[in-house]
Amino acid sequence: MKVFSDAQVKEALPWEGLISELRAAFAKGVSQPLRTAHTVSVPGEPDASFLAMPAWEEGGKLAVKILFIAPGNSARNVPAVNASVMVFDATTGQAEAAMEGAELTARRTAATSALAADLMARKDAKTLLVVGAGTIAGNLIPAHRAVRDYDSVQIWARRPEQAQALADQFDDKVTVATDLDAAVAEADVISAATITNDPLIKGALLKEGAHLDLVGGFTADMREADSDALKRAAGGIIVDTFDGAMAEAGDITQPLAEGAITRDDIVGDMAELCRGEAIPRASDTQITVFKSVGAAIEDFVAARMTAASQT
Image (cartoon, rainbow, N blue to C red; front, side, top):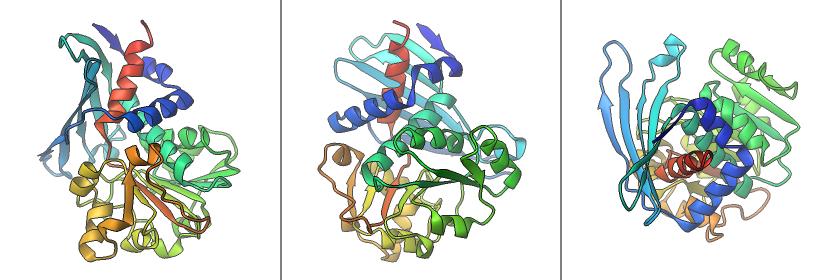
């Protein structure tokens, strides 16, 4: 069995190749039952989450990721997400590869967001706002730049010093936004990767034709955008998977419960988007929203690419 470090995973998953493989896999489909999730109490801190996410292709490979998400890690200045992935032969059950999951999770998440933006955002989008400054946010910038030629990229975070530290890793087109509301009002594409229960993005501020990418929330209590944002995007909303979004995406379930949107306002999932069966952008003024909670198919693609990289 081959073992891959995060550095080897990163090398095996170039943005253009990963985005292309994800698009093909979403269009074709794999078996992916709804992930299992467990709440883990942490004394004196927000609850942690333990998840298991399998996916497989009949006669091909099976990949399973196990991960532990600890929101309290931000205060320790260590990653909130810790994960491992294994790849098996889906016929014999033989274990073929194991890999660290942090880099894989960050890259597949960012690549899926970039794929959605490529299919949903205006072709002339020139300004990108990244909300958050963690590991996922750091990957969203190069991933989104792989599908659009942005004139400027701004980063907003609750801690400006973290936003600046992230901006310093890139060229001078990447700068820090000090006023989130003002940055939201100016951005063509907004990609949010935060862990919050209180909406940060106000729908009333979104410019016509904007694309909103919501990555951070992964429980029904979490949400990054208010109900106005989803309401303004009615008819232009895509989710990664319906099962995941309807069970775990507060950015979707809460506006639905409030009556701000209806089920019909969600025009499709990533599979339908990649097959051309869902058309979220009816015009250049349509606001579009992609809500991701994470899907095992993304881990499957990234793990399969990694395992095959040293054959």
